Length: 201
Image (cartoon, rainbow, N blue to C red):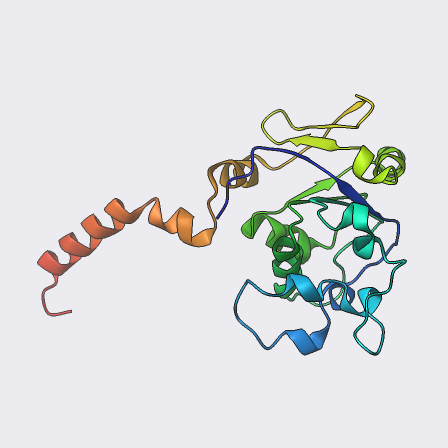
């Protein structure tokens, strides 16, 4: 998993509440078990019309936000079903950080497991970042995970809280497999000892 330390990027404003996982990645795209290739279908029903043409007014279809790496969203982001395809699609599009007043718990935890930093901030601070994001490619927001700060394009700084273990995993680029592999030598020692003590197993 790619490490997350510091990110300076364009933020896309999505001022909608209760954006559920079916809006993030509709059910017809859940057949794959690959983490790649879903970015093109992120927010599919909002991005494309019935003929598959881009809807120009949708934020991620606007030229200034096509390379957005940060998403500033409304309350209760990622609610609905627990599909892990939702963070897969967000990451595959290129978004590494989502900022909102609140998240659904399962989506929130799935983000960390897939290299995305979800940040919860008070509504008034999200409002400031939303306005900043509306400046488009002329404004870049900086997210510093180690310092646990967000800096607006105007230099205003907001601290944020993050679980120490989840922070460690993101800084080191460790998903569940990576965490297991950190203990590979201990696992090998246990298996060798177990094989010696119980050769009949």
